[in-house]
Amino acid sequence: MKARSLKWAVPVRLTILGSGSAGNCAYLETEETRLLIDAGFSGRQIRQRLASIGRTPESLHGILITHEHSDHIQGLTSLCTHQQVPIYCNRLTKEAVAAQLEAKFDCRLFSTGATIELGDVEVDTFSVPHDAYDPVGFLLRTASGNIGFLTDLGHATKLVIQRVRAANVLLLEANHDLKLLQEDTHRPWSIKQRILSRHGHLSNDAAAEAAEQIVSAELRSLYLGHLSRDCNRPALAHRAVSERLQDIGAHHVRVESTSQDTPCPTLTL
Ligand SMILES: [Zn+2]
Ligand SMILES: [Zn+2]
Image 1 (cartoon, rainbow, N blue to C red):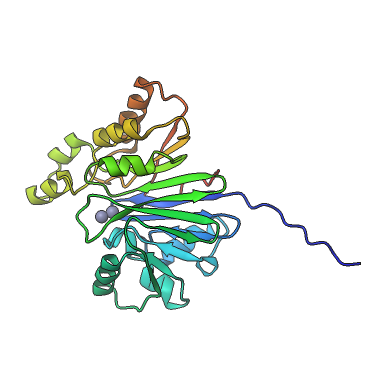
Image 2: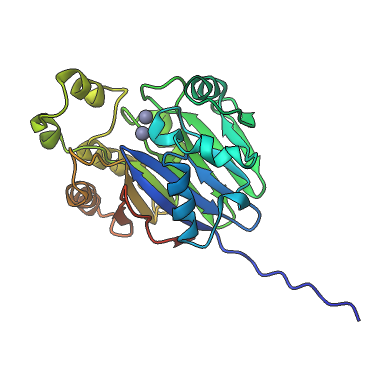
């Protein structure tokens, strides 16, 4: 008698492996597809963090890249030296990555604004205002829900808000507390100006404002990411955003601050 193959449905799982001004990387797993979203830690760090959830870089089907800043790509060379894992990015990002990193990558290009299919995941790509060549945000559509990535955002444009409104889970930048940034003595004024500009990074208050505009009845989980180590505190970011959501009656959204150093507990959608 022929053995019947039993197929168990694999739940969709998201693990923010780390997020902050010095590194960003997330791991998504569905029935058919295993992806990294950005690779902004060393290859060794990414391998260790994947190992902490029982996964390896060898099983990846691809790496999605938002833009070429080192806190999003520094692990690429090491991850792609031993294996040819495809990298998904737009042309200007590919050129900017190639100018920084020596290795040869298997780049699969998309046009910003296009939707690409990676196994059972559909990835909407859209432009974000940030000081890189062609930075993008993503909305990953899976059978169990949609996950938005908005890690580096100078300001929340109408386009951005509209593209992520369908998210059930969202990683949203809450980079700095305005007062801590203004009082910071390590950063020269020019850098502060860059961070505060419309192509820099979202403050906690700006993140709260964006969250208010994005929130829908379907948004369940909001991760606050890309926190500056010197100019922010997880509690400040959390308070700014969760108070705003409480004020508008959005009690159904779970808000969680991410960390640079440790992965968040895995979320099953
Ligand atoms: Zn950036
Ligand atoms: Zn960044």
